[in-house]
Length: 287
Ligand SMILES: C[S@@+](CC[C@H](N)C(=O)[O-])C[C@H]1O[C@@H](n2cnc3c(N)ncnc32)[C@H](O)[C@@H]1O
Ligand SMILES: CC(C)=CCC/C(C)=C/COP(=O)(O)OP(=O)(O)O
Ligand SMILES: [Mg+2]
Image 1 (tube, rainbow, N blue to C red):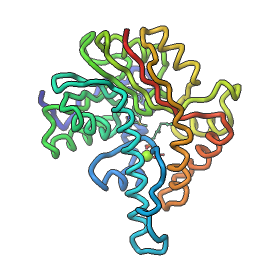
Image 2: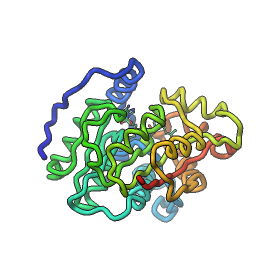
Image 3: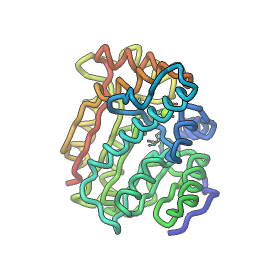
């Protein structure tokens, strides 16, 4: 497989997808770039796990901000490691699909862990170029590639992939359309994994905090019920459903203390704490 740095850019399938492509083409928030600069893995997802206060050290220390950035990044990479833990046995000859791959951090980690091929798709030409450039710099562009395309109609063969995932990218699409497409590209016996924020049906309807997050990112957060129903309708049978809400709260509380805040931190903390919103991992077998 060879990759190029200038991506072919198809016309967006809908005006909404055009808006999302423009959003990510123009995104350059320090909270993402400075964290990625720590070790060259660029993520657009959030963190999980306990904060290591020893690593943070004294807040008055001149290196305090740098240590905080490194700690937030460690928690974001821990999130991607957990997602990869749920893909099952992946061999070097297998292909994985990173649907809504962003700048490609999770794709690189998957290749580094399994030695396999990873195909990423994103609506953003800038993100695809960024991811392909990183893969070239790492000398893994024969195994890791990003393409500009709609994850609802991916340019992959039926049954081609042993595993596929959405890492915080499923809130931009209709879930029935999304899972029909994952089900098509996955081999029978393959594994699908998502980590996502979803609204909690026990709360009743999307809370004001969930609406604020939707407006902030121009996305459409689905309910936990919609995920399970759309999977069941598309031959994806949950093997694990893990509520990561308690695991992601320390990340948000730490991020809220940093100089890299974006203004959405309180909405996430409030939504998680009032029970209207959950951070979940769902791993499903393609049967
Ligand atoms: C929040 S970012 C997550 C990026 C990445 N998964 C990560 O963990 O770093 C959302 C991503 O979803 C992508 N996306 C949204 N709708 C899409 C669609 N219909 N087809 C392909 N990618 C899409 C965006 O282009 C963006 O890369
Ligand atoms: C859990 C939910 C609802 C996620 C919405 C999707 C999203 C924008 C994820 C993080 O992206 P980012 O890393 O670019 O965002 P930020 O700049 O806030 O770190
Ligand atoms: Mg981020």
